[in-house]
View (cartoon, rainbow over the protein chains, first blue to last red):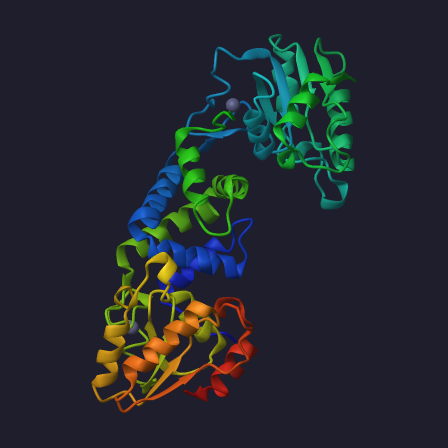
Length: 201
Length: 201
Ligand SMILES: [Zn+2]
Ligand SMILES: [Zn+2]
């Protein structure tokens, strides 16, 4: 068994860093070393940024975005089109669409997709809240921007069924999204094109 | 130009995370998102571990290791062989040898290698301090465990010249180390074998 290579403070830092996506045990050690070597330039500022984030970041009770305000900056931005809601699986997808500057609308974060094998049913997602937002009268269009996976498309159909009868137009992203692909990995041009060419359901 | 996708607190977190080795801009966003989604389980503990590390971690004035004590835990560990010093370029190499459990000796971190092209000369490394440690009388063997690169081997020769005349046996790692390879990427067996088969210079 490998020995601990540094004091408990550094070992704990390595263990926590290794839990970040994209960092394995070895790269977590490299990251920890880079941090302790750049104590004033990187470690202290990052510690402070994380402390601020941990204290101030909340989940938006309207759309599910993460921000320091509830409702979030997007939900309270009067310059955005409040009649259009883009439905995404995850905050990462919201960020990807915002980075692309794909649309100036509001969002709704589902919190995942239906996944019978994993025991994720409609009640585990924020579908009820989406229906309630659409029933309020202000929303006229819902763009379902879920991943082009089997679970994503099944989720899109359930949402479409739940919105049937409400006075909202429902569309999905155009088939610019590669089958089986995930939004967060697409380039901005593809995301923008997929929003522009959205097709009615 | 992509828009900022979140409040300034999250953007700052992303920017700082992107400066860690192994994380690019995209994986820094994923890491930031993972952090804010696991606020209590990951973000807050990591913020606190970093704050503790920033406050407590120092560079050992004897060997150049990073630790919360100066002299470091290794330098003050009476169970270690104080007569043998393993000379490494970087703290990452010290960690790699310790993980391998390759030897129970003390270390000396050079802080790099000689690199005329980058303007790194002998005075930019801790060679004088190494000579002083070896002149104290307690040290009987120096194992030069620098990378098997051209700069590393040139550095080894300069160190050997500086130690000539002192009553210390100087050796280098065995040729188990791949030519051009870096210590930190080697498996533990290779590192241990290279220590065992060290050859006199
Ligand atoms: Zn919101
Ligand atoms: Zn030390």
